[in-house]
Length: 385
Image (tube, rainbow, N blue to C red; front, side):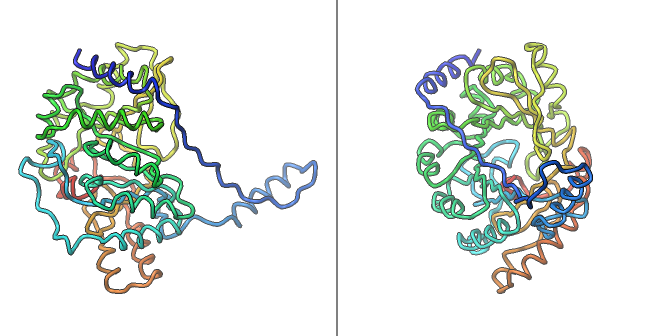
């Protein structure tokens, strides 16, 4: 019942909103002249020629299992203005000295290199990326890069309403907002800070400015917010939201416990009992989400099944931490410092070689649900997940 006034409030905001969309035409390779009635053999030969002579995806960003890494997540800061229970301990975590963090120019230098090699999507993360003073300038600089199709941000939403008009003008075209409850008092308990209404205002502003869908990330934890699944789904009836239910994942300091995890199948069963007409939606091969939609609803529901059903086989993601380390797997503890090589004056060729070696060492899949919980891994706020 707590979700009802929130839903009504969102609808009042969205009534006057223009529907927004952003599309990018696919890049196609030029074809040589062809006869009016090519034979099957000729078509086969031509397709083979195009495959062999088209510009190849970067070998440096292709791992030994053929996965092409076109998606880069960059942590802009380790700092956060919340203390979410699933992310870090209440007292926070030790932060890297400022001198050891990437400067804006270092971030842009590395980004240019990755985009030149084939990265076409960048997501800015943290900590909380919107507390970085020059975040709007960073987005504007990224927007200038040829070949970059998507610039996204994952935010807790506290500063979003204030900054979003500037960010949109600078080139931001995708938003993920973390929201784990629709009950203000529970919000304060989960994140250990006030701010529920600021997050809701950020969601309102994103809808108002035409972002579609507005992705809402909800980490589901047993005994805490699994009773709100249906309330979140109900929001998608009249709003352009993609509510993404995320399985609770282990990171240093978040006191992960298997009993707290609510699996994708359990969540799906609960939703289908209320809406048996729920339909599976086809997703891109590299998508981390299993997407569903209720016929007639404006939005959709997704599940991030990192723990119960990994999606390692199609993973196309790389991460750069705020201190300049390259992580090829969110759940791996192997990292290589691009910052140190950059500051030592490494050439572009040297950096590419280091990146290529790291990508080449990426494993077929992560260690598995139970083993991950035992692994030493940096706190979520450091990784920029």
